[in-house]
Every structure is written in structure tokens, then in C-alpha cells.
Image 1 (cartoon, rainbow, N blue to C red):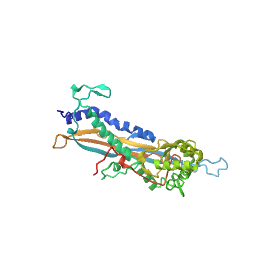
Image 2 (tube, rainbow, N blue to C red):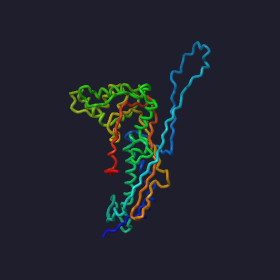
Image 3 (tube, rainbow, N blue to C red):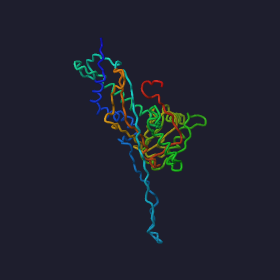
Image 4 (cartoon, helix red, strand yellow):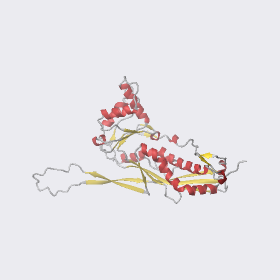
Length: 349
């Protein structure tokens, strides 16, 4: 008869042994997501402040009849702070160690297993899966999350990029007057009274000339791209197939961009109409997995010794590094999160 070989002591020892690896695992798991959006990953202890210089323009004047104005004082620049704060979040899972039974594993990952050692191959697997879920919760909520100290869901654990953007719009740092908020209206499917391709082209034509002259990331939900691509296909009836690359090239050629936009789209953007164009590296993720001595803890706080708790505590945050219209712009629409992306299943509360 099979015996239970995963016990609290074994998990605690495995956790202690793998602790350095587990602390680095979130950054490793985040890498594909960060790379897709050209984001920065910063280790932050409570707060990171980036000082932005806003230069005053039109300072130069001809050297002629000075009229006694040579000593006039002029402001050269002002400093604006872009703050990245991280919020503490945790995972507390209660599990029954009897769920994990032993089995004879002859070969694992191509290597012969010595079952005489009785080291269960699932010890590390359990620990890794808990960390992976923790990171996936962050990724799914990275744009839409809004911090709520009394909340109970990943979407309330920190402030995501769209929440940060909403604060900048509310403070009028991002506005039509400043040139970094462009009104587009909704992107509907092409048809009578709806021209999503023309709407998108108008948006790109309205960008600051400096932003149009540099490589830029184009962050957009898939439905916006689909509507614009369908619009391109209907505009040029001779085309049988229109690719996303064709659409990006069309925008480059017709909006007088120096480079084709680098499309960044992902299911975590949700559905809706919010689009962002920015210089690569404008978005930053803050993380601290070393808040405590143990990033992950395995504990037995229950009367039943077969019940154990996995406890993870870390800090996450996000920041729009710069919103100057020369490097950043967005439209006036919104998107809705798809929180069903978390995990393979969820349990109703």
C-alpha cells in the first residue's frame, strides 16, 4: 500500500533549500511579459523616485541691441517626480499533505531517480506552482488593478498601469491641452458610420512630432487591432489577406512615422478601446521579494498536523516613468479586465 511521503518537515526542508531560487523565480517568470511590453523591472524597497527634467523652450535670442536686458533671469527647467511605490501582497494557502502520495519515479527530466533517498519529486513542484500562481495573478492584473487595503482579490493588491494613467489624467498631467491625450471615440467594426482604420490613423497623425520620429511601442487590445485590420481589408478590396504587419506599415506610411509601430498586445489588456503609444522602456514594474527573511514559508498552524499553510509575502507596483508628449500618448477610451485568465480554475467565494 502507498505511504504518504510528503510531510511538513520535508516541505520545510525543501523550501529552505530552494529559498534563493524561489526568490528569483518571480523575476524569471515575469521576463516574457516584461519583454513583450519593453518594461523595466526594478527592485524597490518601499519607494523609487525618478526625477524628470522639463526644459523650458525658446530661451535663445539674438545678440544685438540688448536694451539693458542682459541680466534678466529665466527659468531653465523644472523638475517633475515620477514615483514608483510597491504594495504588500500575500498568498495564504491551506492544504492537506495527504493529497500528495508517493510514487516510484524511475526517470525525471531525463535523469535516473534514486528512490532509496525517498526524496519526493513533488516537493519542489508544489513550491514552484504556488510561486507561479502568485506571479500570474500579478501579470493578469498588471494593467487594471486598483489597490484596496480591505480587498481580497489580486485585482485589489496594487495599482496597475491603467490606474496610474487615470491618476495622471485626473491631475491633468495627461490632457488634450498637453498633447498626450488624444480623443478618438470608440473603435467599432467597419461599417456605415464606422471607420476604425481612419480613427486609428487620425490618432497616429495627432502624435507629437518627436514621438513620431522615434521607435515606439503601440499598446492596444486585440479587438482594436482586429477592427482596424478589417477596415484596411475593406478599404483595399483587391487585398485577399491583410496581416498585422501590413497594418503597422500602413500607419507608418500614412501617418509619416519614422518607424513602424511595435505592436504590444496581450490578453491581460482586456477588451475595450484604450490605446497607448510610448517610447520603449516607459513602463516600469517594481518588485521586492526579499521583504522578509523567507520569501515563502511552510507552516503548520492548525490542530490537524496534516494541514499545512504556504505563505508568500512580496511587494509589487507599477509606474509610467514619463508622460511627456514627446515620449507618451494615449486616447480617451477605457478597457475592461479579463480576470478569468488567472489560473486553470477558480473557486467561488
